[in-house]
Image 1 (cartoon, helix red, strand yellow):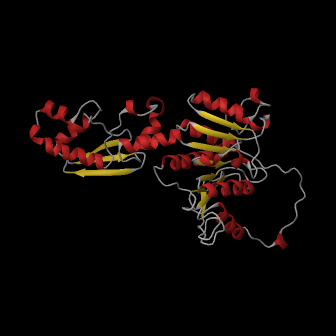
Image 2 (cartoon, helix red, strand yellow):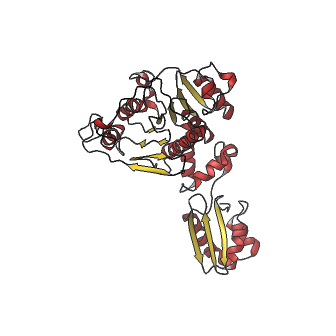
Image 3 (cartoon, helix red, strand yellow):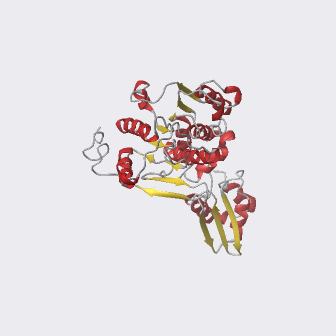
Length: 363
């Protein structure tokens, strides 16, 4: 094994006999006391070009070989050393920053390669290519996802351009799916992208046999995000597909939607029931609104922030490198004070979908 520190690791020489290793991606510290000077020399030469045998021979210290090997084994166990062989990692030169980020969540080069292959080869469906869906698709392709299904029946309008990524004025009048596919292929020509030019309805996912998908991200808000979430959520429960509620406004532009792992977290129906209780208000205090053609505002930076959260959750789901953060919760991003307020939800034992006696529990 050629000796190399992980790219994320900083070495801090705190004093004569203390060395600190700091893993910048995960913010972990490893401190070693009573540090022998020869170990500092060894660290200074861990550039991926020498082996332990090379080092021992260079400094003529064969009698310390076993002690140095113990030190190296310790660094490996703490995730300080990298055993990545760049030539063995698919698309390493293009995605090396992503790979080195994932490395801090891996236990070995084989585990890292497994995570990276999952990201590149698993199938992701994105429904709705608006302000959140477009940014989400680009985030995923930038991070190695290659197999995508894009679903949207909308045509690009000039009013889309201030917040939706991947579209230009010359694309106006074209299907969103086609224009975004072209942009994604410019970013990675190896992508396999399927376009579906149909609105989401009760039969769309079944009709196109999306049950072989590894993740479905719902960014559709027509007719409402609540209705599209129920359609997607029920389909995903039937086939045990992880899914993310990732788009639509429904009176909160900055909604950070939940990630759902069927039968391991609260499902869409669990959320719906608990939200009904939370949002219950005295009908006598509500006045009927008569404004027609109401349009909510939309702010590009807020949309891209939401999509970034979705992208991070999606990579966790696809790679299985760590548990998604938004299981059993969803958040609200406040664009004024930059705070995020999360609300937790429970998986309901009596849920009609995922409860023990639920419709999809045993299927």
